[in-house]
Length: 252
Image 1 (cartoon, rainbow, N blue to C red):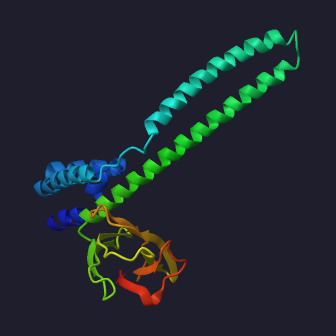
Image 2 (tube, rainbow, N blue to C red; image 1 turned 120 degrees about the vertical axis):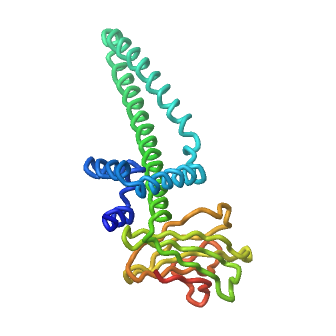
Image 3 (cartoon, one colour; image 1 turned 180 degrees about the horizontal axis):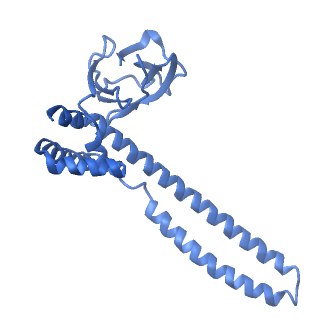
């Protein structure tokens, strides 16, 4: 029985259940275990507290201007409907007087439809961005709370002695993140850049700027025997890492 409970706790079913990602059968199993086994109930309550604290710490603000854009879309659609009705009436009357005016109203109506499509596309893009951010937070929560996650401390070499970072790698979920805690100052014409060598390919992870949020996690591409580098590059970044300017690396 103890092995059965241990295997259950080592899975990620509790985390998935908290995040609403379980199937109907998984949900039934989780709820049954919570009721039947005090060990499961205790860990579930701890995860609830951790998730609440993590959500507050990493609360995602709505994209700037989203509310205004949605309201603007509603107003435009309302104005568009009124204009279309007016245009339709006017076109019916004007058709008997001047046939050419029908084209004008059709063109105006078409412009309104194009504008409405544009607004819809923008809102869909914003919704996709928010969904991606939520998925990233979910993955971070799973990695930080899963007992199979491995933790690696990263220190800079002689070129960046004060560089400090912590990497979190979960080989079961195939997720990896890095938390850069400190970056030494560089001259204005230089910058830090992060790379990852995954499955024989070098991936540019972008320029690392001044650390404003020391708790922020940056996603690392997962791969077997992957290596991540931090280098010093010219301001604006480079297309490939400068090997002699590697200041930190981690194998995971």
